[in-house]
View (spheres, rainbow, N blue to C red):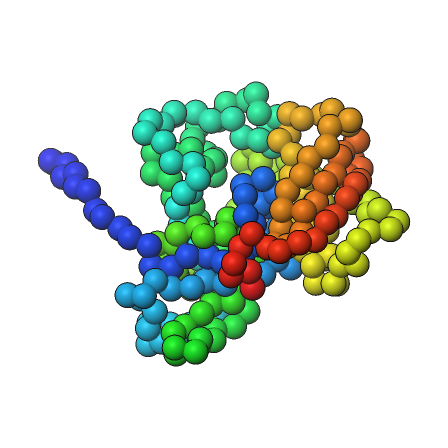
Length: 240
C-alpha cells in the first residue's frame, strides 16, 4: 500500500499570557502548580465568541502548543530526561522532551472561566499551565473524563521519579509581603525544585522571574531555601 506524505500548514489560534517570562522555573508538567493563573488570548481571526460556545461547561482543557523556545533544524532519536539525572538516554517518543521532530507540546489545564473583553472577544482563564508567556497555541480541545481518564495507566520509567519534591523554607523577613495567592503559586513552583536534576552544588544560587517577582534560592539536600524575593514591574505587559 503506498504511503502519502504531505505537509500541513498550521498557524496559532491563540497565545498564553502568564507570569513565566523565561523557561527556567516553569513546572515540568501541567498541573504541578495548580495555583498559577494564566489567560488564553485568541488571535484576531479566531477571537469569535461563537467559537467557544459551550466550553464553559468543561472543567479542563487540552492545549496543543509549540515549544517556541526549543526550535531546531535537526532531531535526535534519544534525549536525556531531566528527572533521570540528565545522563540516561530514553527514546524521544517515550518522553515529553521539547526537542522533538515536531516541537509540539500537550498540556491539560483547568478552565476557571470564560469571559469577553471590551471588544466582546473571548478570553479563557486557566490554571496549572506549564507554558511560557507568549507561547503560541495551535488548538484547544475539551478534556473528557469518559475517554481521557485512565486510572490504571502505567507511568513507565517516570513512575519512581514523579513524586519528587523539596521542602521550601522562606526567609523570616521577606520584602515584599506576598499576597496569599502569589505565595501559594510560588510555593508550588519551588517545591518541584526547578533546578536541572544533575545540579547538586548547595552553594550555588539560582534565580528566576514569575510575574513581577524575582526569586533567588539555593538547595541543599531536600531543602530549598529562598534567599531573596524582590518585586518590580512585570516583564510581561499583559500579566493577569
